[in-house]
Length: 362
Image 1 (cartoon, rainbow, N blue to C red):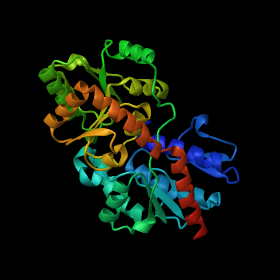
Image 2 (cartoon, rainbow, N blue to C red):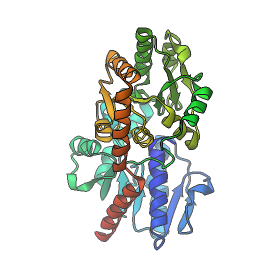
Image 3 (cartoon, one colour):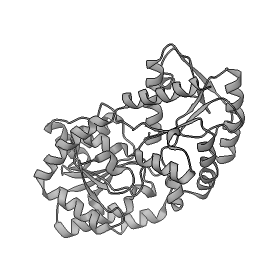
Image 4 (tube, rainbow, N blue to C red):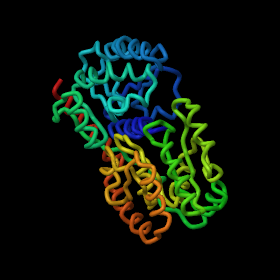
């Protein structure tokens, strides 16, 4: 799962387990895996139609959800991806993770962009309360949609407890399996435009050509939008043989890979949060981060920062982390401390407070 998926999973699991006195109805749009029914106080309900396109979103939220809320006498509808029903008067709490599509419309397919730009502001105003994942996103939602600050609560993302430092033997095994036994920079995320992977690849190529370093680049993630141009640019790199793609990995494996990396290279130009930053910090892995949007808020002093639009600056950041062992040790210590500011337990508690307040106002 990517960020939205982990947020949904980790938060709803805790809401259910921490509040057995309440009944939770989970609405699915297709047959579900039983592992998502977290406890006996969860009643799973499949609603038609399967919704993966704008017209089906509208039908599902405005008609299927509206009827289900009435049928099951629901007190409040919580939407962890922010899509709401525009046809119900039942209180709703929506989560808007970020507004990337408002600032970088070129990053999305036309069908997704049109739906989000038309409907997200409507959802923001319709919601009785909003949750977002960073102070940066809160301010962005306030200013972009004219939402009162008091309506928006920040509940940061967290990271799995699987992400932690590992022994030298584990690091050796990981490097032998994924990067020809050599040290590596790590990128984690969907291969989406805003993750800035194209510039990272060019910066890595420049870094390799300039320094002759043996450090590799390991990329974990799947493409969201097919991009032939990306393939062509990858093939044009001089050091493409030192770049390794894994696709999606099991969480346990990803945790070991993160902890074994020389540094995380996370140079997105837009993020509402950036969960891989917390995962890396929990592992004591140094970070090269973009200096825009929510990333400095999350990484604090545990990262070297760069302009994500400047390939040479990204390259110099990689070189700095590659060559300076003392800096890596310093960032590792700061990261372990900074990571303590984020936890799914704390996020779930904050969201439950929002839900409780909203129901009390009903």
